[in-house]
Image 1: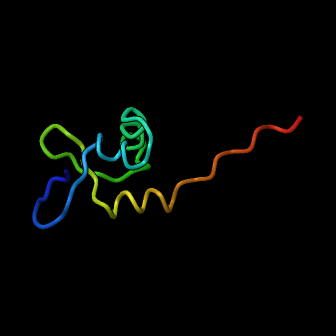
Image 2 (image 1 turned 90 degrees about the horizontal axis):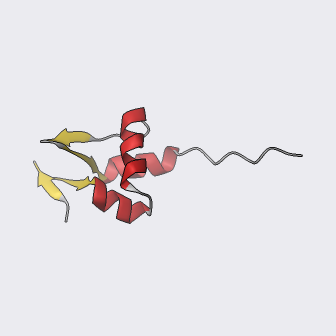
Length: 68
């Protein structure tokens, strides 16, 4: 269940990982590298729905494997 602060819903790493089907370790690396926006509330990272949608809309496509 998202945390509501000043009328905005914030999703924690576990909730985001379940939504996107990726591990929490991957999400943490996205925060570290700046690929995903978020805020630290207390000692945990959170993202809004907008942050998650921005991340999904700006994701780069996977590279093609090298041709032989």
